[in-house]
Image (cartoon, rainbow, N blue to C red; front, side, top):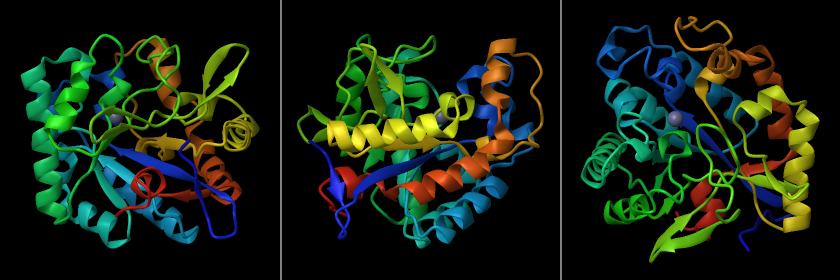
Length: 286
Ligand SMILES: [Zn+2]
């Protein structure tokens, strides 16, 4: 069991943000190739300012799984994250899915990201999250790479059924996947003999907020486990430029209910206790 409690006895959950820009998401990768990223207007810095202000307002610390590519271009942003007491973690260097790389390529990407983030922040980086939760039964070797790159935990599996990712038969809660390497799967709720997403993503914007609240409460009270939730800076940016090319489904998922995200997050921050992933799942060690 992985549950962290506050001094008043309430359960503490882990809040995480995947720091990437709107044009770096996997669903758009064919339409905005990596070599053109430097020519696209960036919005991550302004969106991150809003997130940092929102967290400060609610006195919440979180974990930021950040791309090495972003860190190199916005070192000031990295310093703002750590100066505010948040945990800096890695989302890889250039948002390449683990499932689309070989062993050596994947290892090089996650090592480079760790080195860049540690260099800029001056802090050890212990957590890693694979882009698009791209670790599952077909590529368990990815955990060998993550251990070899000397990360202490990963949060790279979403144990749900999904057309682009997901490993529905993987364990739902934190477990040791390699000696000294913990996997903290994004939170799911068990209902109707299936796992349902309860830790963020498009569903948080698609379904009414009360569904998310019910799900996280259920994980806390019935499973007796701390939850881990994630969102992206671009989800708080209804005015982001629209990307031409992706199919209807990809656009629906990306642009749905962006204008409600701010108020939903405020409710989420008020209804639950939140902290950094390392404090909730690595036995409070900093
Ligand atoms: Zn991502």
